Image 1 (cartoon, rainbow, N blue to C red):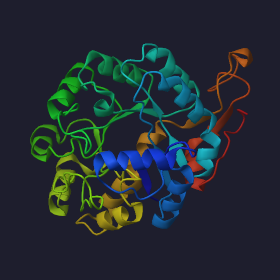
Image 2 (tube, rainbow, N blue to C red; image 1 turned 45 degrees about the vertical axis):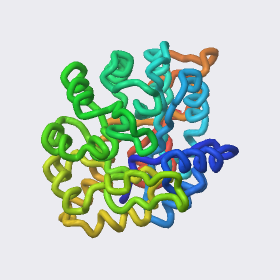
Image 3 (cartoon, rainbow, N blue to C red; image 1 turned 60 degrees about the vertical axis):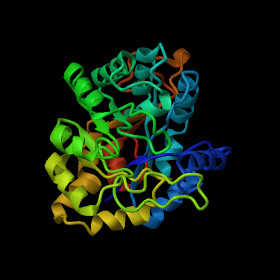
Image 4 (cartoon, helix red, strand yellow; image 1 turned 90 degrees about the vertical axis):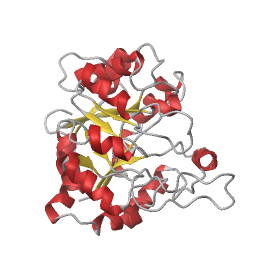
Length: 329
């Protein structure tokens, strides 16, 4: 089994426009059109069993609207072998209530992107969201390091992360891009071995710039395979989650690259699926459907309102189809 823990999709009507805009900013070509179908097709070509979808909220006003849409689409996304996270913005004030709503809807985690949200990771607004998410048992996945389209400031530096770990100590924190993209010496000396997961998204192999790009991206910032393997083993193969950052990496190529690196069969299985399954196994149940106050029923287990369905996440992962939890629907 292969689980891609770091992918992105966008609304079908606007996905191609959004992806082309982001490609121009980062000067890198996309490998799908950014749609759900595009990701699903890419997964089939790469023999990837499941992908985790990570929405990015660039404005506080997007939080409730986008999360509601993702909650409503959970069954459809799971049919496409996509597990979706919710999103949060540091300037969104009702974060406790929104995190609870996501949890009640069976969403297993949230994505934060300090660079796109223009807020440092160790800002109190970020830390209180991560603290609350941890308290509610949610996974938090954070963009870590320089962003390829935003060069002037590292909003989630190693120093920011170390402060977060000291003051909050979240239980389920995933640092994207191998802990801090482009800052590999600091990651290896100061962060490797910390009680966090790293994902492998957009961190190894060549970066090809867009033809006629106005400026070349940081094409030399990705890790060389030998350096990648060394960093993985120093951090611990039990704390590495395979991720591609699709549509910004070709999933099929990314699987091939890591499969030819100097890992044992057991280490590769940990990275490609077992660690993700373990992290997601802390979330045994997904609740499908929007919580409706008028249908609230305190007698229900797991779900909050009678219109919602309770999905057995572990059986669904094993059987590669949506399976409802026996006795709770």
